[in-house]
Image 1 (cartoon, helix red, strand yellow):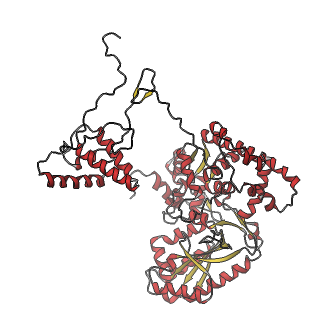
Image 2: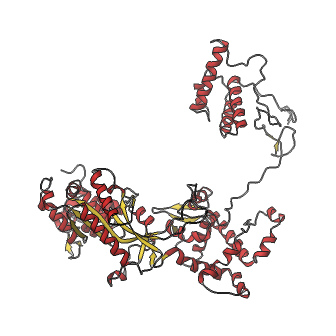
Image 3: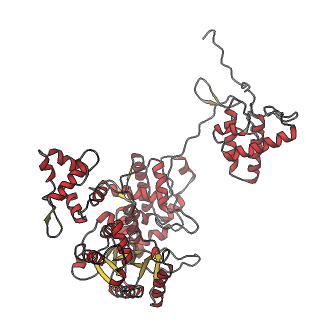
Length: 617
């Protein structure tokens, strides 16, 4: 192109000097000092230097530098202190936009050695679009390595578990958290629920990395986890390598790894661990089958090996055999702290005097319950014993003193607590009412109202109500219940079920008089009983309806069976032809065991609440 400026290669053009040389020099000194001490703050100083290099205007003080990226309160305060010291040494009119005589100029140049002013080299592109350094030579761009989780790590196990679940015909294509952890645990060496000693991370922590790498997607509430297209492709590669690893004998696998394997990007490098041979023989030992060395060829069939590992590990994970667990009473920490400290400590002393082993912990619903805790032996060389599995027995107690019962009825907690106890997943809720009729003489509600509330709890709500006189009798009842449950479950094999996956299914054993042995884990129970957790539209709608006077939980449940959301109820109102038809829309809905009609009065109240514009009068 004639007349245009010719392209010049070779020597770089000189950049303008830094307008803030003193700040640059101080930051460089701070960075070098941190680098000598091995502190990670050196990288923060380097980022601040880069930001200062790009700023073309002079700064009067360090406070003005806060507008720059990577300049926080700490760096600005250090620079202000150095600036004040500079003024004291050189006078209040000393210039801060030039260096003292004899000082080296501020570095905007790039050095190949490890000098204190080392910065990233500036680059420019030639006509072909390739990167060039100072010598004008082409520089090969480094290829970014794809993310691959380590073998038997948390991410590895989650990807394989989701992939294998999608290979099942008719699968739903996603998994819940409890289900995913249960299926992925046999594929991982770390625990998905208990962190290692001295660490706060579990194998489940790698799920956030998979989501960040766009290999996993999390949707809905409760959370559903599924593979993305990239995650499915990676999991497919992991599964193929896993099958090849099973097909190759252990001796050949240990000698097959060579340097040429590292050059092939299409092959996932999953180096076998030292205890691989022990894991290979684990299915045979767990199933109790004796195999000769000639039967080892059965491991070369990936499908059969996978089935064997699944069936052999499930009993260890999902069952508690008789004699392998203890029945332990769990006490909510509110029952032992706060309020009347002497009265609450009296309960603890009575339990200890009766020889009852109990555990104080936070319970999100109820005051007392019992768990079947696995017996675990301490591991030699470890400070703490492994975490024991805990299954919640079907008995939960809500303790109420007369004054507490009166207060909970007045502020509405009484009805809410009964509602949450019904939904907690335990089949035998118990109300322990403490106090005599004389203790209700000076309360805000009359004694007849309190007695009627207790009767309604037993007759209408279906709770078992136990009346005691004082704290000593409460401790005696808890002692008797603990010993009764220990004897009741001593010869039972307990099975862990997931309420999130199976729901609240009535037990056949319970109808025949035997204790239910299909129990949920304590972690799932306590998580599901959180009071202020995220709620569905249906749950919020139910709580709205129950705020109406005279509309109980049974009536709200009957309305929800017909109209699950406010939108469906409003749509039904719009289809009605007249005003009277809208008012009587809910009157014929039947509720409860006796199948009574809801009635026109409540139906009219609900209609006015949801369809009256403006404030209600």
